[in-house]
Image 1: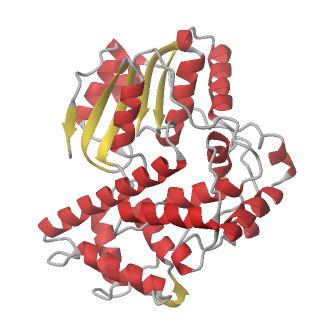
Image 2: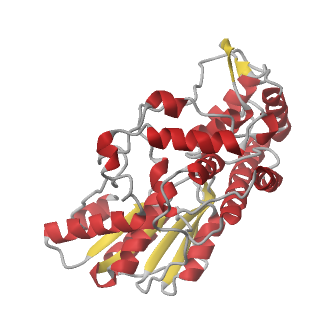
Length: 372
């Protein structure tokens, strides 16, 4: 929270159930880390992915069994209400970011009289089919990469300045698809095409960290010395995807349909090829526990401020536009930059958000803040 908001409000934070320290879903880390190939062009199959999801669920710990059927955003909204009751406040103001915006939307639906203000930062659109989710996510990560490539072409300090960053990435992808891309400082460690795209998105486009991304790609391409290794994160047993599966009904009728959705998604992202949501959706297709809060349009009647960056690789700007249209008394503030998370980016984003928090004044339609 900003200093201005922190001086005005008591701040209470919530670690949603099933994640981090709040009774996380814990499963056998050896099973989780033995993930299959999710790329149908390099040998991945829906059958193996579905089997993986079922094996992970079967390996989950006994304590997880008490919560694994109760992880959807409606349950988290009830937890928020329990906190409100416990602290004795009549109404609360909610700030949420990324996937946390889904339980915040749900709370505003379920307990509208207990809501004073709601800020949805980098908002999740829960009213999307599986195909819409995959294609819009792919478009977003491609737009974020293209914003990086444009910056690189105009910035002499970029390690790929004077080169086509998209072409460099394409060459690395093709090399990975042939099984020939390895960690420069450890040639025994192979990098899959999915791993290349996932790390590019999650490690570098999220913040964004464009200079380190250019440096990383240059080292992978042999344009710079090897440098420090960048490893794919390993699970310690936590499996937060279970919450996503509780909020989304995702099915593929056949191997043919799964491969078709991959092709459609790839067409939206010719450089990145995929998005990390592809792995999550594919796992959920094999998750044996039915979704208890499947996709639907929000029914929110309280004033809401939506924040989103123009080039967000995780929650697309088009989701923010969709959600704002779906909530009658809402306004969208666009940060005309890249990365995931908006509130604390600049004095402009802080000022507009704090004015809403403190005075309940929403910005005019079309309001935006320039990139830092």
